[in-house]
Length: 103
Image 1 (tube, rainbow, N blue to C red):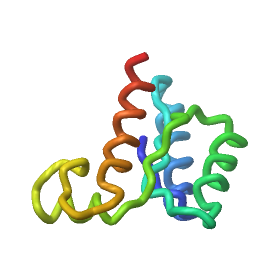
Image 2: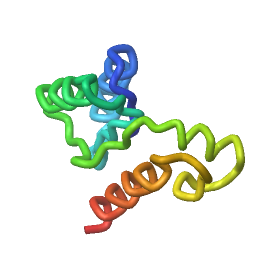
Image 3: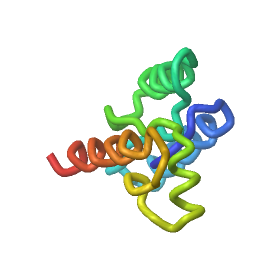
């Protein structure tokens, strides 16, 4: 279940997970996405909140890069966005997630 690190999204995610659990769902993990760069601690704080709630989450998180927006605008995958210095970093985040899912 993807979520951003802002408090409203996190609270909605936690409520959704409770509903999933009540319905008998057991096979899920949280993916933190659109994590702002340092010095922001939003990603770390969100990870701690999810951990304290005892909810499983991916170790990998997806950082926030303008390359994602540009990829959507021009219709390509993030790793192929021309002229964006972090396009390969964005692609690497998803490749790391893929490895984590399929290991």
